[in-house]
Image (cartoon, rainbow over all chains, first blue to last red; front, side, top):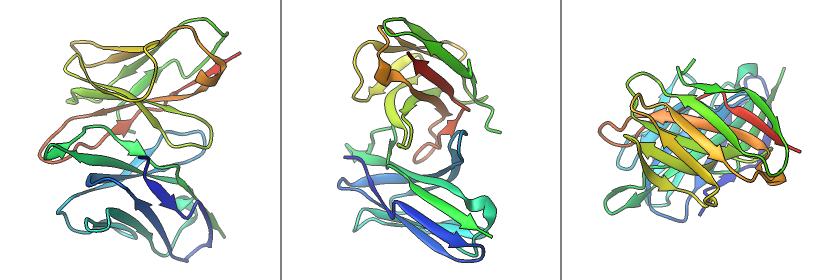
Amino acid sequence: QQPVQSPQAVILREGEDAVINCSSSKALYSVHWYRQKHGEAPVFLMILLKGGEQKGHEKISASFNEKKQQSSLYLTASQLSYSGTYFCGTEWVNYGGSQGNLIFGKGTKLSVKP
Amino acid sequence: ETGVTQSPTHLIKTRGQQVTLRCSSQSGHNTVSWYQQALGQGPQFIFQYYREEENGRGNFPPRFSGLQFPNYSSELNVNALELDDSALYLCASSTRLAGAETQYFGPGTRLLVL
């Protein structure tokens, strides 16, 4: 029941926008977004809880659609530093709470060119 | 910089050997999760420790075992190493407040099994 991320890869020019989607077949408790650069550990971006609102800071934001069990990450006016692989990690609903560990998608590779 | 440290950074072992990986969690965090990340894949959940007890396990065989110590640092032990165990091993520390918990990853240990 690994979440499905789309697209698998995207190439942007600096200043362009991108949307990365994360879909689950199970009811979600929370969605966590991370960015990982080559050879480094994943870096936390943001967390969205069921019943929560869209979150974001500066030019990176995300939404959580409980009805569709889907989250989307929005990157606007992309910068070279946005390059990397983006992962969503999902927590499922379990007896009214969450299962307490993250199940990650396969990632979306984002390349921002000058 | 997350405050989560891991050792060693790199390790080369041969098939059949045993390995111990270490993780020091961020100050104030009482939960440690371990993940295996193969090349080009998302992190795969191995297990989680909360206050020295195993608190969930992914689809990994019993030769993957762990410990958490009173100071919340943790070890991952892998016996009878196989070639497919070659991967980046990540630990993430967290603490559950109201709602879901944010997991902060350490830099990882890259294990190569020959």
